[in-house]
Image (cartoon, rainbow over all chains, first blue to last red; front, side, top):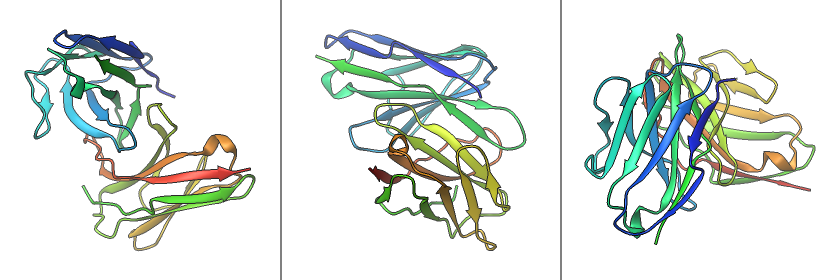
Length: 116
Length: 110
């Protein structure tokens, strides 16, 4: 099946710094990727939809200037958490859409961000 | 996208079939039923999907009622590694965003 990777798997950063998370589709091209965040014992919450070559579409309540998304190629999308604060600590997960008549979305393994 | 309702938790004995129900009474004609699961601290894993016919793959079976208002995911012989949160999601075809509900936490008991 389709494989999506994320890097890094875990990152600890200091408050005020920026962190970049990469999401790659390894064996397929993805024109659309999605970014989610998940708090402990909670469900996944969609943050934004990332389309290759165009601006990302953010969900209501998600600050686009804080969570910068770049989808520069058909196999790579990046999420940059700018000026991170402890409340940004979370599990960030990306997914990539596979083409076809029905919809299949494959998820990355997630990135655990801890802001100290 | 139609909303779904799932029980918050279920237990299943190891080796027995796990039957996970999902209600999606507002589903529309072009919406598929998808099941994903999430093992602790990992990304969600695709399990199976269907439109109106029952489906089976190497992981599970999906039974969709004739009126399509509910479905059941069946893990035929549950193992301890099947302990996870299972999400039932209804989405239309194409590059549509996925909205996750709270899912069912399945605990497989030795």
